[in-house]
Length: 336
Image (tube, rainbow, N blue to C red; front, side):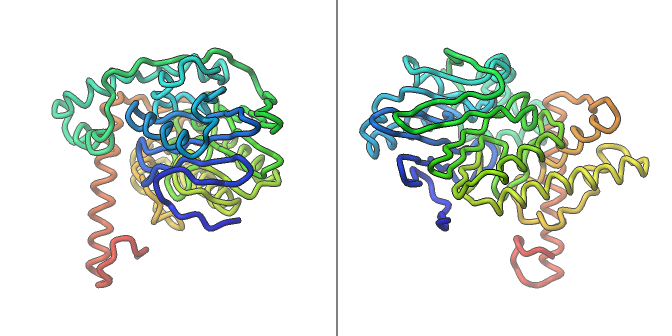
């Protein structure tokens, strides 16, 4: 496969498949895709706000004339960084699973806007959320639901091109769609794959997510557009599957040893994943696995969760700086 640079913009994958990439892939900076054949188009996901989505659509229209009219939009899951731009596709067929469509209002744009407005009221968690979500504009977004839903799997035609939609959730969220273009050996994964970054396990179970990775690995695929991060090949899926198994195994060790959930989250070393981004997601990830092991996921408010992730982010940064100083290499990204 090609060695894809991690640059913002539209990447031509060949044969009418395109990936739209948003560095640096961290909170809210998601990817999308475009499939075109014989003048027909399918868009995979929108972006976190209207400005970003409008910029993406204009870039696509400039590069692909038939993208001036998007025939079908597929939302791979319900999170706002893949759905908040849907209103700019009114008049197009908007397709997803019934579970995704039902869950699209789980966090409203207005809720995020209000939280950002009063971030100072809830301490370091609010400051951390502002740091992550401050660049996005959530005011003025009208949530736009699907015009059509399906269950399980669905086969589509985009022109003469076969496209397969497969629901592999619950995993990242309650329902997660893979968009597979078999003839072109391309798959758009939504947030079933984070390339070079910790995922957020909002739903689980982890075993189901691992199974989804195995499904991708079983396909004849060369080019994979993840939900976040650069365009990759199968090796990135293998590494991501190894991450999921590692976090599960390390969490279970600490659960069996009688540790508390939060102590376990802060205790697990990054190991081979030390240089991956968004490590603070270890907190919700361990909470989800703890829920699978115990039958009850720890209950925290949204504000409390952001506070815990902020503390994790701060403590990990301090540890890395101390390790860098001790090493003398001056590189905080070096694995010490």
